[in-house]
Length: 356
Image (cartoon, rainbow, N blue to C red):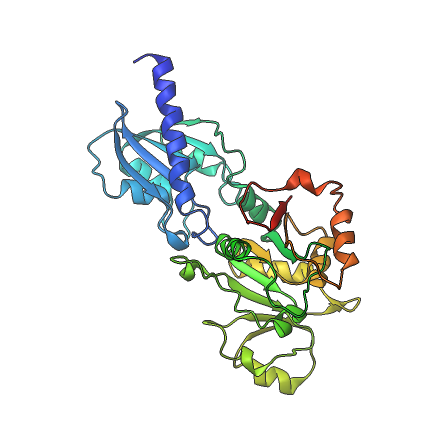
């Protein structure tokens, strides 16, 4: 086989591995979604694997465990195989056991406990290891940010009227059905969601994903509620305990509400709860992608500390009599001079989505 043809196969199998990884990208918990393609040495595909829901077993294990050790193999993985003992044995062990002779990968795992160690361990086992550049340069962007910073990757979503108001005649929803579906898609794409006190009290939101077939992937819920203002409707609204960050010293409230919610007390900094501590705690809960769906005040707290990685602004075609200049100022402060540059190619009917 010519070198040119062989390189074609390598690129093809590598991109196929990415196609597999995309299937579970938002369902693997704290672990990244990895795709794995196994071939024999004559380029026949003999198995494939993907990281399991909730992150284990890993893709390499899922692809190789069903095969015998008789055939010499190549594997193509989107990220270097792990080399450490965690809740499962390292993937480098099963790669050696199943007679894999060549490993092709696209990304280094930036997790400090891996970060090239998987590659080195495979080379020590006399396995050929080679990197294939992927056309998808941002596939692990959120994962890389999270493992390096020890914060979740933060995405924000804010709905606005045509004239920058966050309210419209007291209505809970003023965007259309397509925009609501997009909001629920964001909930599926993030493993955690956070709102502030005002959204929590005024909207009494469920904060789950209600897209058909994706309900079980609803995010973990976090609320910033400094003085523990809670309504009786909140008690049994959620399928599992939500976490409330507070700064209250009211022992009677704490005793009462800890039966319904996970309460985490934080210090106030200049009359605001420390958002850095909030992100660190959310990370320790195993959450790596956080959606902030609270109101303008909550959004500004995180924006001012430069903790928001991606913004989504959804504009309704309706106009409110209560224009929020602060919302317009927030967008201007992001150095976004012409929103039209950032309009997304997502059909929200008469609503408009701007992302940056």
